[in-house]
Length: 219
Image 1 (cartoon, rainbow, N blue to C red):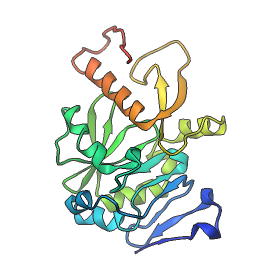
Image 2 (image 1 turned 30 degrees about the vertical axis):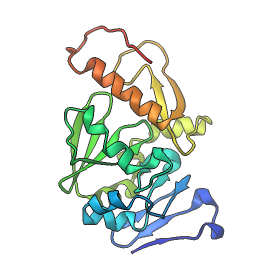
Image 3 (image 1 turned 180 degrees about the horizontal axis):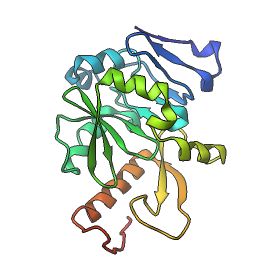
């Protein structure tokens, strides 16, 4: 059973959610939803995701470092159906049964596949099996979110006042996959814009050999 502290009792940034079954605790919450407005998507989910979304149907924690989607019609940037129906059309490693239930601050995706959690590197189009089930994923990300979600550089940006608002992801240019002698720029952008950017990078580079020079087309 998931127990959420009422917002009126604590500062929103200090709001924490705990679940005995999943042994989880969220901090740095900037968005949280409980209402299920997309029942058709909810009905398609495996039971463990239904159990979770019944209590936490969309949450952005760690100041944007982890963004778990929900069965929501609006806003689209947190809608599970909006990305679930689309992401597999771009990435060769995904199928329509794979559920992109969450993402990190930069737009890499966490995928539920047959009871196991995978991480999709959205620039490279590479799918890593984290060898965790859903409950173990929640335990890992709450026990040590900085290491598990690789938040060190993101937290440094936060401390420098480069911060995400709900509906945003962090754009990086040049992308991490490219070697550069220049400083990278970091900028909050709308989540869909960042996801489309990562898709574009993947599509332009997926058939290139390592070390190949290229010119990036950005629309």
